[in-house]
Image (tube, rainbow, N blue to C red; front, side, top):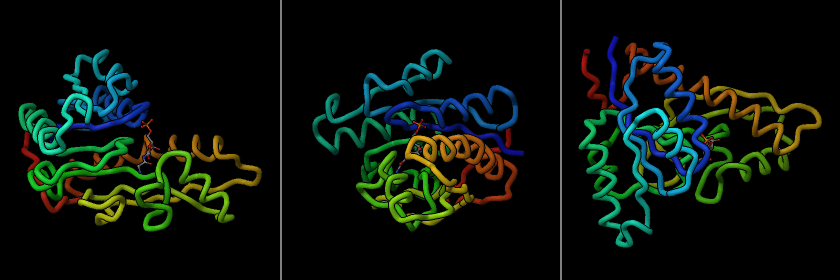
Length: 207
Ligand code: GAR
């Protein structure tokens, strides 16, 4: 069983981040949350990380107006904390080319739908569930995929279905999908840890 150092990047609530932290604390997941980065200085994700004594950084266009400098700062924060796998958990921005290159094949994103449907630049958070309901889908789901330079188009690592129920609103559907995301991110990271899923850029060490 390999344990790996995680760098987690989140923009807002950080409930997926919290689920991952909880799983590492309980021993369910063999991983070490080593650094949390957010483009939102007031995010719950940063406060959750700080309350767990995980190094947490606000890095954004406000702290680094030049995109190249922001890319470098994110890369350095991840490298400084010996991150092996990067986990995007509700990160709403693109990563820069240096970070993408350094961690190629080792950056995961979670998306609240069955990609390739309901993905792309404008498709995040509630908008995804609005589109799923508007299309009359009976099934939606969760996708975990590798991050590449474009939104939501990297190779799919794992997917699971979530039912759309009669009378669902965006809120009820979003909540059902989010609950599934929490367990599914942890399950998928466990599979990476036990070797069931092998990432193309995997560099997890035996500890
Ligand atoms: C999650 O539903 C995640 O799938 C979604 O943002 C939410 C973050 O929640 N991500 C996207 O839509 C990316 N395209 P959280 O901050 O509570 O983990």
